Amino acid sequence: MNKIFEVPLYPYAHHADEDTAAPARRKVVVIGAGPVGLAAAIDLAQQGTEVVVLDDNDKVSFGSRAICFAKRPLEILDRLGCGQPMVDKGVQWNVGKVFFDDRQVYDFNLLPEDGHKRPAFINLQQYYFEEYLVKRVRELQEQGAPIEIRGRNKVSAIGTHPDHVTLEIDTPEGSYNLEADWLIACDGAGSPTRQMLGLDFVGRVFEDNFLIADVIMEADFPTERWFWFDPPFNKGQSALLHKQPDGVWRIDLQLGWDIDKEREKRPENVIPRLKAMLGEDVKFELEWVSIYTFQCRRMEQFRHGRVLFAGDSAHQVSPFGARGANSGVQDTDNLCWKLQLVIDGKAPESLLDSYDVERVHGADENILNSSRSTDFITPKSEMSRVLRDAVLDLSEHYEFARPLVNSGRLSVPCTYDGSPLNSADALDGPERTRPGSSCPDAPLGDGFLLDQLGGKFVLLTIDADAPDVIEEQGIEVTRLALSVKDDKTLALKDRYLGKHESGVYLIRPDQHVAARRPSFDENQFRHAIRRAIGKE
Amino acid sequence: MTEDQLILTPNINGADDFYADLLTAHEGLSKAESDALNARLVLVLANHIGKRAILKQALAAAALKPGEDTA
Image (cartoon, rainbow over all chains, first blue to last red; front, side, top):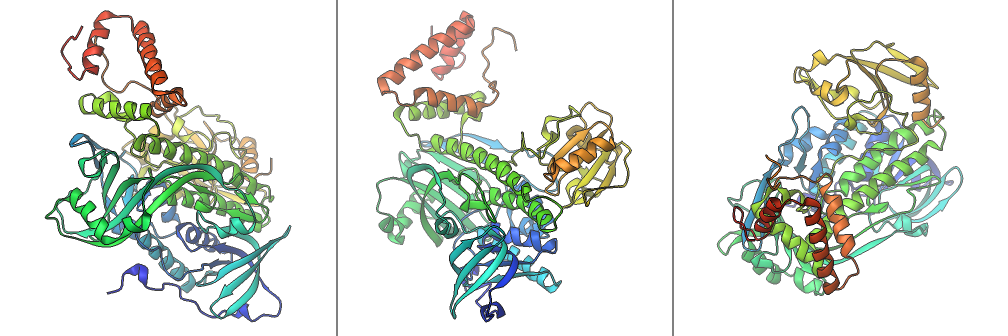
């Protein structure tokens, strides 16, 4: 049987756009059918905007690659109509073990907070993630949504203009030209788009190599995350064992800087390393092996006129903490509603500059966190290693040292503090729901809050009066009227009111808080809506 | 917990920020300079704590011999 990543999912097919005398003009073109490009396309198509996805390949990602998907991206996928298959297929885990040298120093339980529809995260191979997104694209197509994926369409030249972008595209049958009102570049860390436009991508290179292997084994290892610092089977380095669906285990082994990559990738060199780790008697089969190095860097700006960069093409992080695909999906979540309003003529083009401000802030937070994890896992000086080993030794005996152990910090959504779209906090409520925050979920009877918020502007009232609809500048904001009594667990009260009796929130289409007050004030909320769409 | 008891549960707000500051303080130093910095840091922190009973417990904890006074 062929593996899913060996089968063309969106094979090349001749398109009428290839035969037109003058280039066809499309609303939005997305380059790259990876997790980020597909999420962007689905988001726009769901809102009725014409979108064409171009990819130089015709298959899902080769090998597991991104394997941890965090809660916020899963919530976004719910809005995109494909969260459930991901969660059904994915592996959930809560227990992690940390090993140092030849012993376990401690274990931990993530004890995820109750009252959320989605788990803290799931492990799922990137090829499944992409497959489910492609299925969702097909479903939308059947419903008549204006979305298509063109496989083996490689963009070879890009021209930028004040009100559109021109593309030269190579296909197996020759090349053709296409125009787009807007271009979203989701073509990965090596982004050809970025290179064709001659744009910067600066940051820090980490001098290290990691061997990454997907191993199929029927083993008794529990569904836990095991991380080793300086283990006997990989002296002076680190190792990670993590479970994926279908009995596939992900193993990461740090190799150091001075190695022969081609040699290390050969099965005759990989298998002894894995046997030393797993035990001589464990039977396993290698599904995929790769060696990666990484950098932490970002573009100076994510918006360049009509070209918008999202995901790894805009920012690259180390893999520790699962902040690559996860942050990319949050990029498109931030971008698509803004682009939609601009396309519909309801917001000024300058609204897109807030995408740059907010997601650069997110990228910096991710780069900071993943750089710190990397510095802990691979100390770059002798003293750095002495301190790291001291933390690990202490962590075996004393609880206080455990928060200092850093083998990757769980990716949580970034709060857009200081964003130009926020209105000043007029509630003084819980910090986690201050303007700029991503709305935390809460249980509501048989359902959950985030499903009810959906993907439009919402006025959330909790034990407060307000009109059912406010229309401002062509934006229709509908009210979601709730009471703390709707949630017997009191999570809604704890997360949105704190010590207050009532609250009114203006929530953006990406489910981030734009404004909040103790009660409805028409003038103030109209002002907040204008601000949230870049009109003030 | 009494005030004469060494705190051995997490007590630093923003542990990652603290650790990053600690690494930054050592950046660019030779090993000898780093050792000296650590020694000074121990003495500065000890003076801030001030209480002999706590310091004795801290010395034991750092020696990974909880419950023993090494002094």
